[in-house]
Every structure is written in structure tokens, then in C-alpha cells.
Length: 200
Image 1 (cartoon, rainbow, N blue to C red):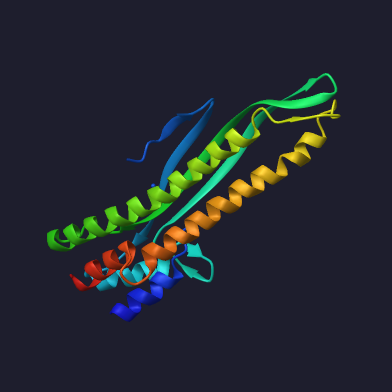
Image 2: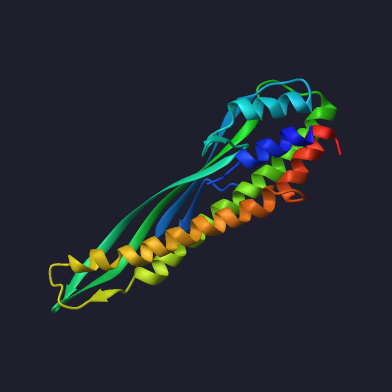
């Protein structure tokens, strides 16, 4: 069973209290949970169902996945011959996709499932926090940016590309590094799976 768990671990590549709506500076953060149904009368059957029905991630399927949509309301203001980004309000929607049993589980199995589910949920919450940190970085590195010789506020939009790209790449790398630690042998998610499937 360890080999089965290990194979699905390699397929997991997750793009995390779930508060529905929270203020973020002058913008908004919305966190929502979507579930997909899994079935089975034992831990191995439930885990096999996760492997069949989990969200697609790369070439395989994941146990859970965190995605986001980020839009901005930006206010570019001409100041003499320059243009300045005086404000930027983000709207961030984070969606956590998590497994949910399609039927009521027996008490013993439910207890094991609850421990497994909570561990996976907390793992995804970390990804969510990384995304929120990325938005904060974008705010910090772009608001107040001023470009000379840009009275029509066109050049500044090109100047914005670099800090936006850097923040996005840093978030992806941080997320990938976190998964690598959590999913490898002995990692937190690896141990959660073994404990759930094998009852260890």
C-alpha cells in the first residue's frame, strides 16, 4: 500500500479556519471551498477513489488543490510629466478543492478520515497564505511606482510587468518547494496518507 500512496503523492502538485470574506488593505479576499465526492467502505477504497476523482494537477490527480483568481482596480494618476500608481485594490478569490465522502462513514473510519482531511486542509491553507502574501508583495512593490516621461500613463504599465512577474514566480517556487517537503517520504502529507490508508 505504501507504493500506491507514494505514486499518488508524486501526482499531487497543489497549485488553506476558512473565512468566507476578509478585508485585504482596501481590497477583498474571498476564500471558498469546493468538494468532490469520494466513495468507499474502507480507508484504501476511499483513497483509491481520491486517485480516480481528485482534481487534475499536471499529468495526474491531486488529493486537494488550491487555485486563485486575482483582479485589480488600479488608479494611475498623471503628475506633471510623470505617471504614478497611487492605489491598487485587489480582489482575490481563493478556491480550495477538497475530498468529501459521498456517504456516512462508520465511526472508526470517520475518525481516521477526519484526521486525514484536517491535515490535508491545513496543507492547502498554507498554499492560500502564500497566495495572500504574494498579493501583499505586489501591493508593496507597485503602489507608489512613478515613471517619468509618461503623461499618458502607458510606460508605467510596462514597468509593472517586472514586479508582477517576480512576485508570481516567487509564489510558484515557494509553493513547489513546500509541496516537495510535504509530499516526499517522511513529509507531513506522506505520513498523513500512510496513517490513513494503513492505520499507522
